[in-house]
Image (tube, rainbow, N blue to C red; front, side, top):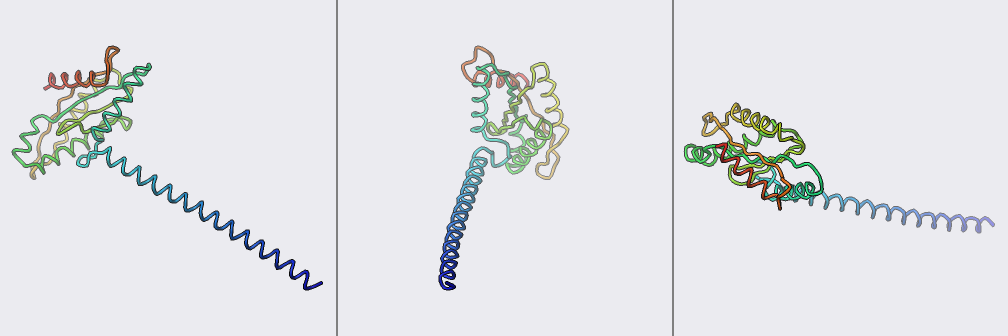
Length: 202
């Protein structure tokens, strides 16, 4: 009888052990799958962030800007309010490169981006459009307030002199601001108006 009970207990223990092993293996598999998914997700996010950023200034890339404008325009066509679309560039930037070299020019670009980021809201998105030209997309900025905000940005950039070639360089920017209109066929129409406004500002 003792042997029978011992055998039954041993069988149960073996079965319990096997079930426990299966459970441990199952949990381990789930943990590995979770970690693998998290790793790949973070890698993909890091790669996407790298593709969406300008490597020099840290501003968003033009590619990301075009996607942002395209989404904003489609939202506008469905009844959303147009964001402010502000194009700006650095006045006489070529002179900085010619006088102090391209390394100094790069420092000026980075300093301008840092200054603008500190000046605008965290919800505003800044993109490097090309060379020394940048695009700012500001959701919820009303046309009545746009000029005032543009003036504050320009004034702040001028007051924060950049360093180039070991010297302090006074930097100014010109800004053109536009909004989507009902007759626009794409975000490019607003961009052209902002570009024209930028050159009128110059």
